Image (cartoon, rainbow, N blue to C red; front, side, top):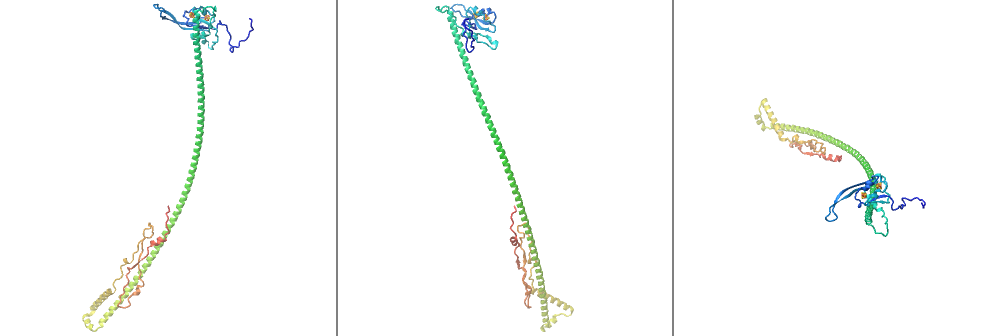
Length: 422
Ligand code: SF4
Ligand code: SF4
């Protein structure tokens, strides 16, 4: 009433409350005996107590064991409490105290049910009761209460330290998780970059591979075109060689035909020469036979004209046509005998006079590989006929032959060199 009203700067500035302010009810569990007085006197029935009985040994030797109520649960529902203070007033063991602490608002009304551990925690904020007399000796209950308060304060500080340690550990965990998340994010970004780089590298490699394939295909096409050109050129070359070979074969065939014609001409000429020589020989033989007949007749006539032989001849000569016929036969036999003695057979048989080989197979390299052997033509033999009656005409044997040069030599010389068409 004597001061001006002013606005408290809560929560920046804590209010300076009086020591006996009714903020929250604190519990000193060591003093509670579970008598249930507070619970029964509470007008709102907001105190919940649960306990059980235990037997404890007697404090003095020989005493009987006592039973003690062991507090299991002590809870106050501040959503129902009306802060009347009856519970504190009726407690006979000073187990309940007023604390000025008021900052325990909750978003959930169910959290306003404070159990014994939280009620014991409020003991740290309970101010000590003022001494009635500063000079008086401290009461025993006060010392016990102070010790309990100090113990509660120590427990509260320990719990606060544990809470701060838990907060620090939680902050460290959150920081570690954040660092780990950043590291994972960085790793993910690096992985994405690596995947992108790998994809780009694969695209480059694919492009290079496709370029290489196109180049290889173009090179293969070029090689194929060159090969086809070479094949066409080779085919043309082979055709040219084949045409040359056919021309050479035709030339060789014509050459062979020409040689055959020449050989046939030579054979015809040789046959004509042989016929002519045979005719001349027969003429010469006929002339010689006539000459021998004349000589024989002359000798017979000379014998008949001799007088010494006339008697003998007359004696020996038979008379009549039979005797003349016999003399003529004898004369003919003597003439033939004389002819055989004068003109022996000097000509060899025809099969020894000439030997004309056949044309060999044209499959050989030389079209004509045989030799042609013709009998030598005697030079002017008919003129060597005997001119006197004593000389006998001996014709040279036809066996002396002249060996014509082999056609193969001319063929080899005339033949153009054959080239391998392949
Ligand atoms: S202060 Fe009053 S209403 Fe609150 S618990 Fe104590 S007796 Fe009950
Ligand atoms: S009255 Fe006191 S001693 Fe009895 S039950 Fe309540 S708090 Fe505990």
